[in-house]
Image (cartoon, rainbow over all chains, first blue to last red):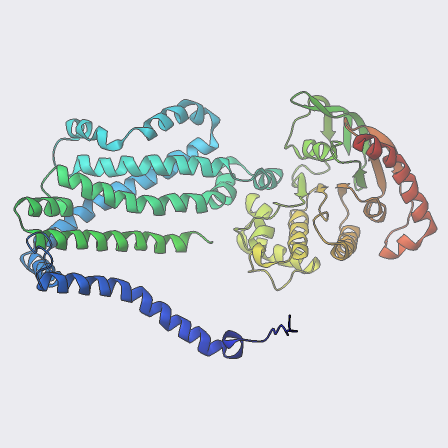
Length: 270
Length: 249
């Protein structure tokens, strides 16, 4: 074997770190946007040359125009505000009730003994199966749908909050207890800030689930909202507006979860 | 004055501590040394009111019931990562309902005394371990408690930092004396800081010896060079050696 020298020397990243980072940034940006743009272009061209059955899969520009029409006639705007209204009420109610009851369960062994097992049992029950009961109790209209969203969110948040409170390090509780912290002070100075990150995760997670539930239940019940619009348009064979509704529902989900995450950033220090 | 009479503690069948009898005078700095698991931290937690004894009684005679009873410095988890350094030190004052502005002034004074001035708005995560324990010291002193409980406060620090913090504690305590119960593994640390060393046996922890430390105050690190220091260190080590070896065997 001939002798060989192993060389360790700076590469491009070390010699021109600025240029290297810029190049990497541009490539990342191009790839991230390139994929969806390419897929849409492929869809559009396949529809135009007749490779796709446009009765079921209309071209993206057809969908765009159907969507603009739906906005112009107000159908889409009404559907969005209806969905948003139910979503916000149900979600906010579920989150608030979940945090409150969760803190209570975490702080009081009596509350835990009385409620924990029942809540865990109910947690595993598919909330959708309860919907007929909600219809019986709350009648037709938006209220049973709001309740369904609220109950779904509540069960996830309440158990996450209880666990979060119970797993606050004993050392932190001790540190406050030595100084004679009372229950309310312990809650404010130790339990809530220590449990907040885990609770925030549940709040963020349930934002997406709430969208899923509201759009889903609108498809099978009532006559308002985006879910209803999507389902009804597919029934009357108007796939372009249906797809527009799907896209709007997707955008609504992205912006809602994004907004929730953003506002949590102001509350929770990470 | 703290009086410990026949204190014992059993954890689910394990006899961890005692019986222990001890009398601690007001203003005394008492170090408690002993092998791991001998219940010295348990004794401290009983004094702090975090844990009840299984048998016996610990009584504290208060000089001024209006002031806070005790503060504690922990090895870790002591200071809150979600509060700034200032808010951490102000915490006992907040609990006592002292106005925030007054609390901030006091917190600042103590942070200066322990050498953390200028970091008031930092969060603990951005500080070194030494700075965090200095903050914990400031918080323990700011409440002006009658009793200061310290559970191996410097054990997690590296050896050089430990020396620095020991000197800081000496300086601060000698200027602001109060009763201290200081749990430690380190014999030299106990000798440097304390008026009196309580040596405990392996589990269940009992008092093996009660040794008074004769070095005059104010003390400095240099007393380690004193021949008496080595003699006492050897004496405590000889007491502990048997306990540690027996325990490990």
